[in-house]
Length: 161
Ligand SMILES: [Zn+2]
Image (cartoon, rainbow, N blue to C red; front, side, top):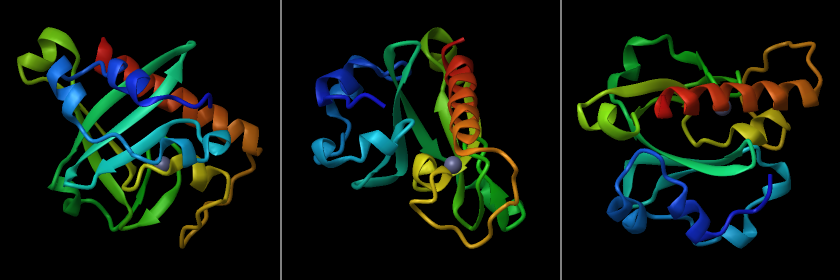
């Protein structure tokens, strides 16, 4: 993806206030992120590990989403599937919940999805980060990347709907 700057990321948040977007922790090492291998940038807040964020470029526009970990993942089977990149992890998938944008979010509506706990989907898809079990899939890398992007766009569309 195209590298994003800190001001671009902060301005792109769709589901938190401007004040929250200006205060939240954006990675300091943005220049060193492996942008060429990223379909989206995902990170955890180092000071508040239950908070996660993702930033992507969808239809040519930067979009960023604030997420919260839900503690409710334990009922799930221990091996779970990321809904974005369709990687199977043992214990490495979190249920992340995004407040919906605008009025719906203020009324407490949110959208949840299981995602790689470290939000490194792009690197799992490319085999740059290993997981214990690999699903046997006949898709090419390009198809897997397209699928990840489509899943991400669908998630973002639910948040902003
Ligand atoms: Zn993933």
